[in-house]
Length: 202
Image (cartoon, rainbow, N blue to C red; front, top):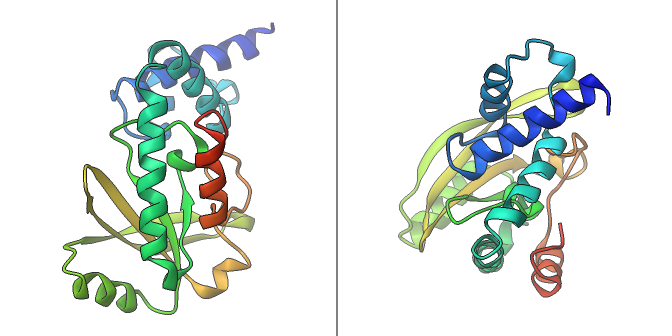
């Protein structure tokens, strides 16, 4: 194993521990803190999101195998239920609940493809679901960045985040932060298949 490869793995596993132990809440923060902790200043030695995601799943398999799979299954079940309720907006699951590294504190993230954010706001208000609105920055191909609305609320014992994408983004979705490729997320059929396959299926 080369020096650079060893450093990348060391940082990836340090970041994974921080994420699993809730010391950090996002990959960027965990990578930055892990690099500082091991004294790495060379950006070429920093692991990408996929490497940290793989290290996190390895860590969970070793230290949280008695709780994480059940938590992931529960979140995917809640996600599927929410997707059925939000069918008018073509919901797609994304984030750690899709990739398989979510734990009990992870939010469920859904892409909704909409004409206007107001239609989702009205939908939630009609069902007396209190929500908070904020903006989220997403990256697209060609390094294009967009600021989009995000509605968040509690659904039972977990957080729900609805990221509202314009209809035209179905043909050009944001980049998945793990794969760095355009990703629409998983629709109802795929999430149902993931539940049948079990938590080991990404």
